[in-house]
Amino acid sequence: MTDARILKIESLEAKVGTENLDILNGVNLEIGKGEVHAIMGPNGSGKSTLAKVLAGHPGYEATAGRVLFKGQNLLELDADERSRAGIFLAFQYPVEIPGVSIANFLRTALQAHLTGAEELDIFEFSDMLTERMSMLEMDISFAERHVNDGFSGGEKKRNEILQMAVLKPTLAVMDETDSGLDIDALKRSGGAEIALELEEDGYKNWKDSELVSLSNESGVSKTA
Ligand SMILES: Nc1ncnc2c1ncn2[C@@H]1O[C@H](COP(=O)(O)OP(=O)(O)O)[C@@H](O)[C@H]1O
Ligand SMILES: [Mg+2]
Image 1 (cartoon, rainbow, N blue to C red):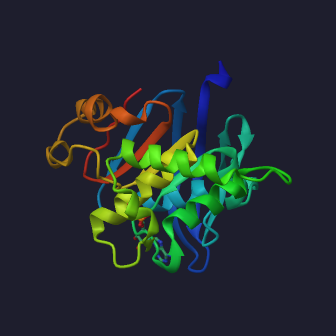
Image 2: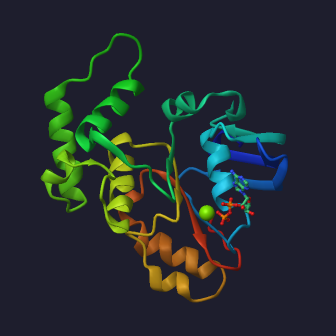
């Protein structure tokens, strides 16, 4: 049944817009509801590029193939439309935004997900943020810090996870967002059992979302 597939990538080719450099040369991937996939490959093999093409990064251009997300042609949507449709990308290198608090950033992102004139209830938002942060065992004061400004690498990754927890996407693409998964498991080489371990242990809090996790390791494995 086609509608059991959340994401269907068919023979996708993509290049860096400015460079005329082909990076993806025929990627095929299907992700069904409730599945966790780990895409592994050496440095420079195109994992981040795939993530950015899925999210709609303007610097990358899909030149062939197609991507269906919940049956919709993803490639014809702008990045903000993809976000509203339920795609989330946790960056490998999160951007620092001095002057903007995490709480404000998240509230604005959620407001942008609402349609029409609907206004986000500030008290509901505050309760939800507190609840999500306590789930992630984060101190509430963290929400008053400016987005990634002066954060350690680990704090930046936790902030990406917090965004995911607040936005509750249908499909989360995590580009080397390794906090919360068992990094030692990734240091070993092996087959699909590594991805299965991730599914069992590493992502146990994330059963509601489909996940794509990108990590820097040779060998390819995938769970279904
Ligand atoms: N904006 C860009 N300009 C030039 N080259 C790029 C750009 N983005 C990616 N590349 C090149 O594309 C290849 C794949 O990069 P990337 O997708 O970041 O790999 P990975 O995430 O698997 O390490 C690399 O050779 C990288 O240098
Ligand atoms: Mg990368």
